[in-house]
Image 1 (tube, helix red, strand yellow):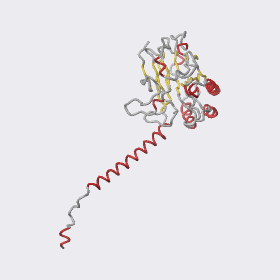
Image 2 (cartoon, rainbow, N blue to C red):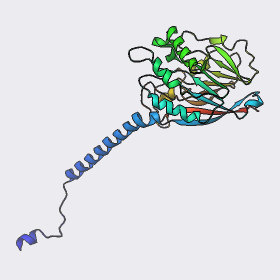
Image 3 (cartoon, helix red, strand yellow):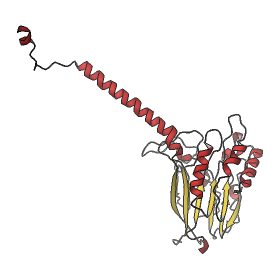
Image 4 (cartoon, rainbow, N blue to C red):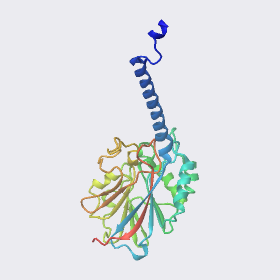
Length: 303
């Protein structure tokens, strides 16, 4: 009886606060570890292959009636090589091929060198067999990686050009091609040894409907445009590949950090579009999904 009185059954047992705190900390650490693992899996395994097909309108001055409503597909930075899965590229190409684009424009960096410094030519040949073809034209330009080691190997670039053209992609190296009345100019890569500079647009009739392909968006700030006031399609940045929400990407391979990704209206009337890239040089993305862009061509009535 005395024992019962001293320890009544309804008396609350006093908890040790250190035990409760320890359990809470263990739960918090466990949740943190699980969250970090999930984030790592998403960043390295999910988002690098979660392609967004972006749809945009592209108003062009004096656009021929034949091209109104036609589609232009931009693909950029596929980086064929050791770090990008060839089957991922092929499946991505098939998705947009089914859209039957009228024009396909590639804005540089077909490949990344193998780790031993050699060109991934056989892999490039296999992947580009599936590259989407435009009903009117399939064109492209070079990026810095297409020039091999130190972005300076002319012989490597010639091999890349031959391989791309064997696959049906017309490479514009400081020259233009006219597609159903639309003149398309291609700058060779800014960091490479064959950048054309002011000579590319010098003497061109820029009152005609015109589009420019230029891999590195930093070229936008150079005095090479001869009064051009149209669209410029670029790549190169990959959008930074990782970006904190509501902030700019911390790492961008360009001087002007404003040109990270997407459409940028320039002060002189030019419009720059920077594609976030389909491939990668390192398999990691966060808040910057890989992209292919479909533009619908319309006549620009504002001028």
